[in-house]
Length: 177
Length: 129
Image 1 (cartoon, chains in turn blue, red):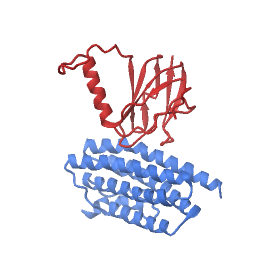
Image 2: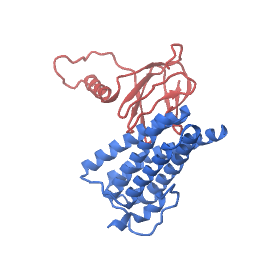
Image 3: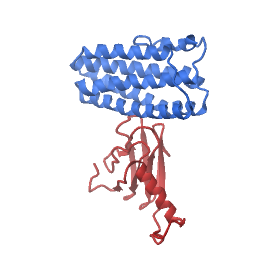
Image 4: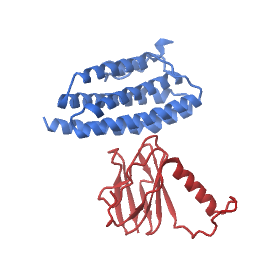
């Protein structure tokens, strides 16, 4: 069953902007739950670091927003999974997300000042785009439980907003180079 | 910041579940549901209250038309905070938590564009006539 979520892997590999392949078996609800929870947690961890380390006020505020919003989404996701008796099932995609997140943190920890800000924001842009692609191509279409699907649809605009927000900061940082 | 010279009077209600519960209880009292000996049945008829639901990073309805003196209540159904902030400074809810709400009493007539200071893609409009 480990193969089931493999098509998603491509999305998240490394700085992971590859588009998901439509081939292969779809993730089940328990795997989708694990992917959602991991995706949020990874961004919470990066946000906490940015809150503390970022040079620019806008980047620190963005990091704080990521912590707040993704924590809120995760509370909803975990509460729903619990109510549906859905135990999040670790899978190659959620594992890849987790590893990518750890790699990103390791890179960011070695940076400071403007270099930190740029690396963090560049990654946030790529990351939110990749999560949106996954939601649209794999997670929302394959979610079987209507409440799980509804939650994904409800929180999708947050990822759109974060992506736009990160892009705005990205261009303002570029303007100061 | 709520400017004392603002054209709209705003009133911040208690946040979170408590305010929702209080509002439900108040609504029950106003329609005369039996609720024990202390029911305040003689409260003055309240001004009309319009609801704006915040969900999926949208204000619904996005444009709302009200009359002066009416109330507008924004209810946040997203799992994270939002604000209702007039772009020209007439009113500002500051952070409305998940499941919280904020109420404004419409004062001076005019068109008020507003936004969420946390989320740049969220905008709404209030027209007071």
